[in-house]
Image 1 (tube, rainbow, N blue to C red):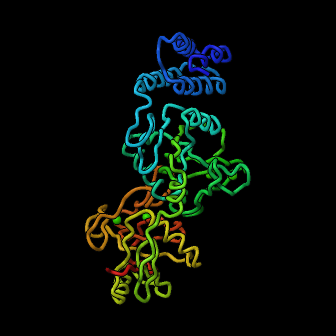
Image 2: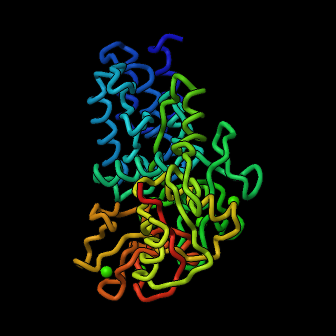
Image 3: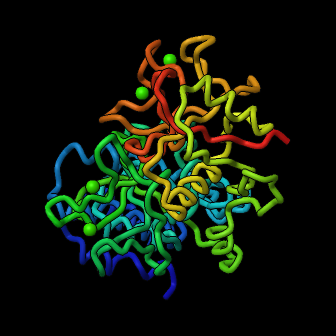
Length: 376
Ligand SMILES: [Ca+2]
Ligand SMILES: [Ca+2]
Ligand SMILES: [Ca+2]
Ligand SMILES: [Ca+2]
């Protein structure tokens, strides 16, 4: 079908659609404006779907306006930027589109991504999660909550992307406070996957009819490579000396037979030519989390080498390097509150078992297990 054919048949179907769209559509039909077919489809999906669902209200004109501006800005469609076809932008190794002007349900969000020749964004590695959270923060998108690709609609508790890939469970993906970790399937009716701003963009299961913004992903040309990244995000095994095991590319010792204060734990590590561990890459935190569960030692809380004793609020590893701040390293406490939040009473970095092994600040005098790293 030629692009011009799309228009007036669609316009007839959407008779309640605002005049603006009809005008846009018919202008297109008459070749007065040369929008690519893709954008007309997006326009119709964006504007008409919510109108059908919610009824038309005056306030929705504001984002109809934003949509117009987006379309006007897209005159350069088909331009490839940083390996991504507009309107997608490169975020790490993914091409993503942040649909911040829309607030629609999960199925409609999927359809919108399909109309952009994409799919809701898959977040399958800790690095993907961190890249997206960084992008949201760096670009001032923190007033939005986003749909991403994931559902357990087919089988409760079995989280899959639309292409059937398993979504990683646990830390550092899913929101956790001191009591429980998502997904919690409230009222047996939370089957779709969101990144919620109230939860610092950690993952949460929510009802699929909620009205949210969305993140689309342009499928990579080389699908095989992409899936490899999902499984092999962590650096490979290296030889480690006695008392140390290779986890996440580090030589670590989980001294579960010891419980000491933070300072005494440092001494314990020194006794093995080590130091309290510095976890500087989010894939290392993921690898440690998986190791704790695989080894059955997730009931322990582990000291890491971070502290803000020297200067309150300035978190440094023992070698003086900065500790990464924010999500997804540091744990969620409650709505709009993230660790560290203990002020001068809490100056040492603990992976606490009841905090689901996210970074959390605790009092340095607590007796906990040293997590040592071999000093190379
Ligand atoms: Ca569910
Ligand atoms: Ca939930
Ligand atoms: Ca402190
Ligand atoms: Ca704390």
